[in-house]
Length: 131
Image 1 (cartoon, one colour):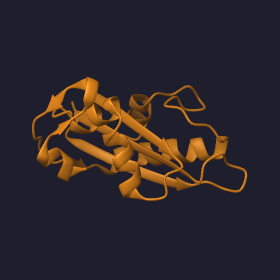
Image 2 (cartoon, helix red, strand yellow; image 1 turned 90 degrees about the horizontal axis):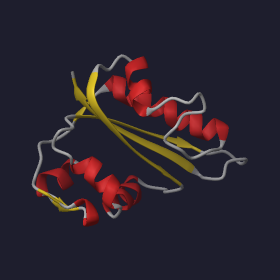
Image 3 (cartoon, rainbow, N blue to C red; image 1 turned 180 degrees about the horizontal axis):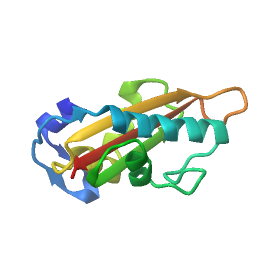
């Protein structure tokens, strides 16, 4: 993801983005992302809204990340990091989240689906700007 940010990108209807600084891994954001991927897998659903009605911002706050701004990309079914990132980069809104220079922190999680799940994998990428 940081290679895309370093190069800049065209995000279709969301516009063109100049190169942006690298994102920093943030454990608390990764915990929020994992909670959401686990929730989607265990509930066999695919949504930005958690089974408890939570948003990504609420999950990030609950994990201890004090944010000023947040964003979230989710995906399901992709079998590799490269395929999920390529999908996000080919989607204007997801691409714009990833390229947004205002975001500085990141956490990502992937949970394997089970035999009763619609998807084989559940991916969550949360992005944040600290307060």
